[in-house]
Image (cartoon, rainbow, N blue to C red):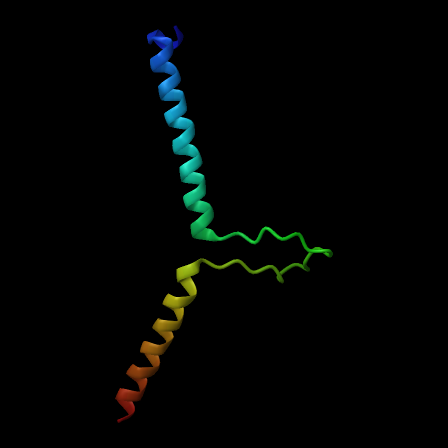
Length: 75
């Protein structure tokens, strides 16, 4: 009996923790959307770009709102 619990309980907890780790890894993988393609030639320093899915959208909307505020001030 590992850790003072019965084998069936230990195996259930082990299985639950492994499934939780796999599910967490899948969620992170889907959120960051890594590029899994292997290029023929490695990219030069500074060429490799990684972005979060929502970051570009929030940056674009922030820039658009700043432009609209500037246009309203000019009127």
